[in-house]
Length: 383
Image (cartoon, rainbow, N blue to C red; front, side, top):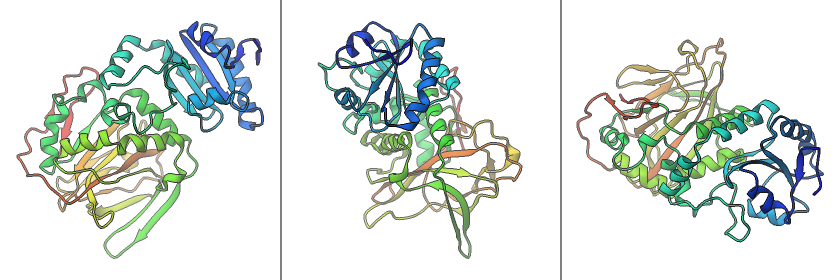
């Protein structure tokens, strides 16, 4: 077999399956010899191989090995894939720094594979095998893979299923409350999306100055310009499984198009009070709003808080907290100015699930906290 360095193996259709079968931990880099980013990443890959002798570190030339590339739906180079026991546990479109790749490998080693298998079985997904005799496994699930595309597949365990703590929170959502879900998603999903937004350089400023409303902030709105991970996340939030989940949770029909965007509030950015009521077209209007905060170590004194007008509350962004509220006349809110002294990035993925008209009966709000029964999580908060 040919090698890129002493420790990096060149994979072909002949050795791909037997080599991955023999290695419980593998890193595969899809590359092209004409790609400058791939050539720049080669020394990083070689150094990673030298530091991690227990892992198979290999690469696939997408130009000469098109069958393998098609099997894993590789759309760009370099693309990195990490496998444990012939299961894909990590995919990244783009190069990583040496320390970052080592962290990914450490996380892959620490995975409880029995738990991973149970999770996949719970959402009805097939094992992601590298055997060419099976249906080709994509780097990310396609629209037909409803289980993996549903938002429930990525929530922390205590929030999944009809008997979860979220089922009780849904009654408060239908009553017009703001629902906050700390540690909402599995850590790997949250870290992946934070990394995607943190590395993005395509932000555009959006501003408007009307008589009673003005705003100034930086966003990604054009889906054609989304980075690959954000495009995949938009699929998750807009899937049929997710729409069914949020419809059940909110008491509103959310079977219309899902609006997904990302935001970065820089110093001076803000948004004055508004309630999000808007029609998306002649048939659908915004039903349920979501804000998934991905700011790390954000300090309250830096501003950028969600101000919930009906309760007079300043709610600073906290990493991996998901905010939900039914859109209506009482859902007035705004984002306070970000301080010029802010040291971090106020990042978020946000948008609306849409549907035909507003439905659902208002019910008593109930307690302000709902225990999740998850020692590693946090109570759901109601405002």
